[in-house]
Length: 102
Image (cartoon, rainbow, N blue to C red; front, side):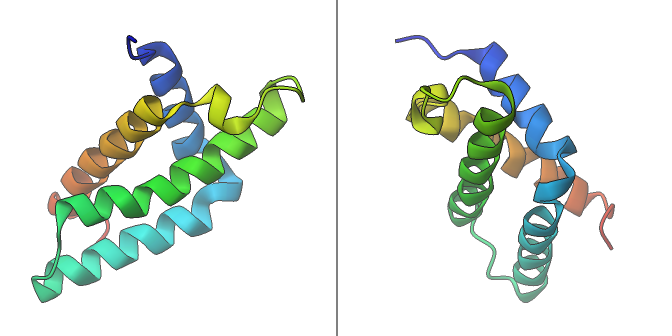
């Protein structure tokens, strides 16, 4: 099965721009900054951390834009969820390394 890149990009944009997800996003960023400073940062664990935000974002996206009969996990299957989480991890790692959240 082929990855739905359009859906991945759309959900990623929704997560980044949705205000109701900002608290969780900020919490993840602070956690990553703290771990990078301590030297305990592990990329794969960060992906797992972002996955919680992806799941919450997919649920919110479904509630706002999709028919009730479509479940959030049918809307965003596991391969797409993983792609969004990895994309967010890489983007925010770069932003953090560039000092955007100092």
